[in-house]
Image (cartoon, rainbow, N blue to C red; front, side, top):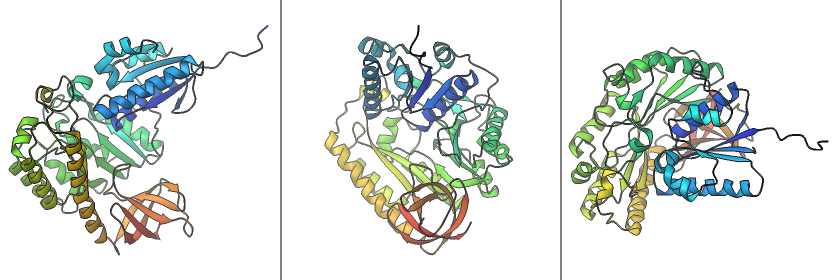
Length: 435
């Protein structure tokens, strides 16, 4: 006679990497739930699905370490099965199968139906927009396209995600409506490249028309644009940004570098002159716009002169938000044929110099906000503070607004108006004006 009941299969989905992976995990979890599966995100479960990142060396290391950690748990009998999916698995499946053979199965980025089958679930085509969101209830990522057609020399994304493929507007509207019905108030539009949206299915860059449709969704208050490529940016998007209050005055546009020789080697299809002109146009057309960009230092052949050009340009442009990464030499990319000839120490020093400049710029821009009023959304409570964001800030990467929780009560997910009373490099302190 049995003394122990059979262990119920609880599937734990572990997400590594970027917001596109977060989205993919949410879709997977939605499919599993629809098949009646017990699914959790980064909690205890006897079946584990690791959604990996394979973008740059640090991310690859984290993914491999996570796999090894769960293999130890499997050997100790704490978990029964481990499945691996996502970008690392897409890019290095044969190597992983050889090096870590005890993983039950590896799946690539386009093998969701096969992964579901291995988990005893069916892929349901009719589940457009059905996701189990893992972000705070007030915002969600909306992935409007998959893959990328750009030829950037340093980037492995096309190897892992394939060619650009836009999602039709009607499907995205359905998904937005379902998210809004679940209490989501902010949509963060993501893709490998927003700029290219629509070219494959509508034969034109169609981001503006998508925005025109999404602003009609009841319950959505903010729509934010992430990861737009500078070359060929559809300027009619700026008209929509000016016209529609729901579209945040915010644009994430990774520019990577500004030295002409480096831009050419990176195969970015632009120049310092064109890029500077584009940023000026953005600011002329949408004066309130906050621009977030990311830069890469230590790219092969980056001279001290190239770096000084970049430094001066960062000082001149005064970006509201900026991140800086050190170059990662990725096999099978075009730049892998070049000599990775900038030392790690120099790369780190250059990144630190850029971020020091940006820290000062951010402090100065934040000082100018003291005394001003802003609409903020409350993301969470931490210690004695409610933590909020303005429309000029994206979660996890940008400035936050701290509101004293000892004398004010606010609900997470709600909007309120605050007045800034103090400012630091990357944070604002504020009092509630009205809620």
